[in-house]
Amino acid sequence: MIKNIMITLLVLFAFGFGMISPELERHLSTAAADQKLPVHIVLKNQYDTRLLFSQVDGLSRQERRVRVAQILGDFARREQESILRYLAEREKQGEVKDIRPIWIVNAVACEATPAVIRELAQRADVHYVNYDLAWCPDLLEKPGAPAEPQYDATWGVRKIRAPEVWAQGYTGQGVVCGHIDTGCDYTHPDLADHMWEDPNYPYHGWNFEENNNNPMDQNGHGTHTAGTVASDGTSGTQCGVAPDARIMVCRVRTVADSVAESQCWQAMQFVVSPPLSPANGADLYTMSLGWMLSWNPHQATWRQVADNVNAAGVIQIVAAGNERYLTPPNSCRCPGNVPPPWWNPQNTGTGTLSGIISIGATDSLDAIASFSSRGPVTWGTVAPYNDYVYPPGLTKPDVSAPGVAVISCRIGGGYQSMDGTSMATPHTAGTVCLMLSKNPNLTPAVVDSILEVTAVDLGPSGKDNDFGAGRIDALAAVN
Image (cartoon, rainbow, N blue to C red; front, top):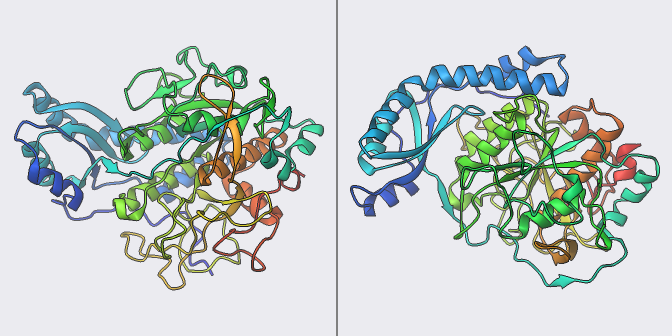
């Protein structure tokens, strides 16, 4: 049973100060005195998410996004005034650069010298300083071989019965899907007409890796996942589940076998409220990224970010991970291990809800993929939550979707095949786009409940730690 349906425990938590993560300490031990290390600084005071929910209750999704951005933005500006002044002074002295305030959680990212980092850790307003780049050699699935046009919908699109939904007139029209990945080839013929439009963002999003307005994909992973959400088959293969949805591209660092946590938080913030167009945010986001727990992500911060995005009414679809070989409760990646927005009575464990719908992968025969991460997960040692103690832990993933031999868009045009929960995640995001094109007012909790209740039950009866509630069924979910 769930102990408390309130979304979070975080009430202006006041931890001790002076904490430097072990990973950052390792880098500090070998850094030159003038070397600037990428860090994120999590401040001690965080906004009470229960209060935040009460302040947006009854508002539409667009109104919630704008109001959450206003409330959290105002809070962060007040809380960060002193530390930003300090960082600006040290920047003048050449000891700090690339200062990026964050409001979706009360944090600041920058690059700073070892001396500055140690001073930051001693501040009374700082909870935690962490190295921002995780070395993660298996972060992304490797691109497969080019695939010839099929002149049909892909097996995954057919398996979840998306064409039957299109026949009812629901194709994702009017829905914006945030896309947090390696970027997107927005010139691909199958995607070019399905990109988020905003006069302040001429290239359909933002590049958080290079901090500019051009999120063009240079990897291939992001173009593939975007194609599964919303490509239209112009070049011969119908890969997209919701061909009339719009993709808001958020490119984050995924090169040199490293990825920046703070860039993902900034991308989630952008999805809620782009700074130059605060009212033109997304309805949901898809994120085929995640941190193995051995990479030491700051899990409490991820969960609070998810809480705050959930308060904004944005639906969050995240890959569970490709580490089936790892023993639970450490198989699912973060933030795929964050609790969902709806409590399935078949879930195990006791704790509070959050906002992440995590996705496992299936093959064309509805078998679980050999790589798909498995639950349960635990938050028993993650303060201030300390819930879902293992055993039994929390059941994860929440649902599964096609993720083996998935054909989708390739950089420069054409198609390629890839495997991974990264491929399953956009199938689910596309399904949510179809649901929202029929009913734009669905909340994250309602979307989660519909996906889980209508899923095709596979494996042991009921929700389990392989398939979650089952393989998604777009037609059943929309109906």
